[in-house]
Image 1 (cartoon, rainbow, N blue to C red):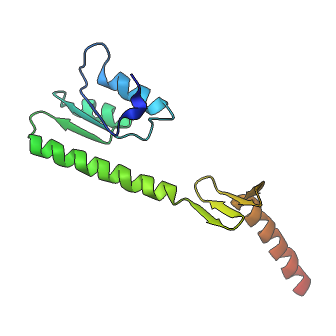
Image 2 (spheres, rainbow, N blue to C red; image 1 turned 90 degrees about the vertical axis):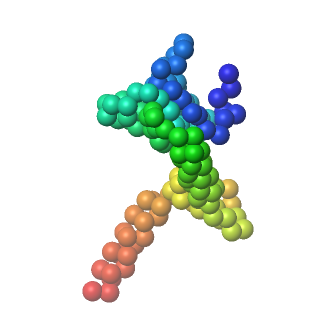
Image 3 (cartoon, rainbow, N blue to C red; image 1 turned 135 degrees about the horizontal axis):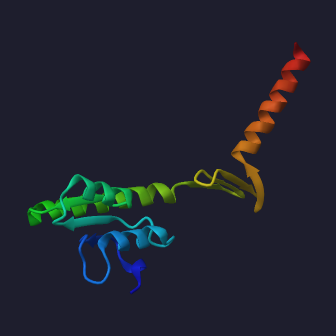
Length: 137
């Protein structure tokens, strides 16, 4: 089954051949699906069950009894948050002519030449600032 085709995973902890916990772990370990939202919908309602689900990276945990209306609202909320964060992620690159600033990778590229990072640039500018200051003191 191609897991990359799903917008959200609605899992039960107690599924047939594989547990929902195991499937959630597989989803989070895969680079292509690690950001896809997971909601557990299950009869397992102890605090330990919920903590396990959240530790595996689920976005919400709904235990029985629940209403269909509540489940639909929670699905909408999780999908909205996921959609909002993907918009933010796509805005992590600022491009102007040949200058590309990638805030997620903390990397600046000019004329397709890598190697300038924020840390390097800050380190270099703070060194030159100290040097310049000592000249004027």
